[in-house]
Amino acid sequence: MSRSSPTDDAIRHLEQLIVQEMPITKHLEFSLATEEDGKLRTTAPLQPNANHMGSAFGGSLSMLATLTGWAMMHQLLEDKMEDMRRKVEVMIQESDIEYLKPVCENIAVICERPDEDALERFQNMLDRWGRARLDLKCKIDAAGERAVTFIGRYVAMAEEE
Image (tube, rainbow, N blue to C red):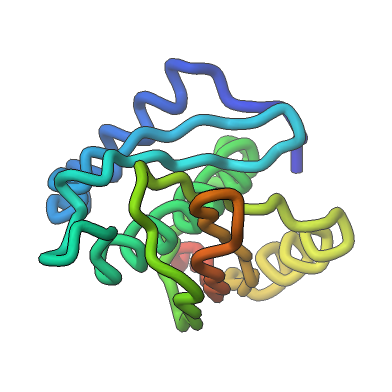
């Protein structure tokens, strides 16, 4: 898989795809960006994602982390999908989220890029079996401290020929 970072146009297209295919995400008012080290950042304003206490609603935090992982999977597969004759679907299989402290500011979710060994195992499984799983880690900090940790297991499934 290529380590090249997506262009701004590709990121905007990915945002549009998420909102179009997952309409509930529109209300999050999120935006995506890539960082130089391959991490993916999703940001969203606090106000449309706030709860009755003025902090970020746990459901919004979970949804933002989930869609950030999904977007990372989409990016990781983008180059490969051009080479494959089959369409690849991505879905979340399971997740674990831990809320450590309230988020009382605009939200920033960071998804770590998997290491090259994990990516190679994932690619080998996808090539051999037409499906593969990958665990992705996301974090949300608030006031300079970890507020949320998220681990999502995502599955890529190629359509049968």
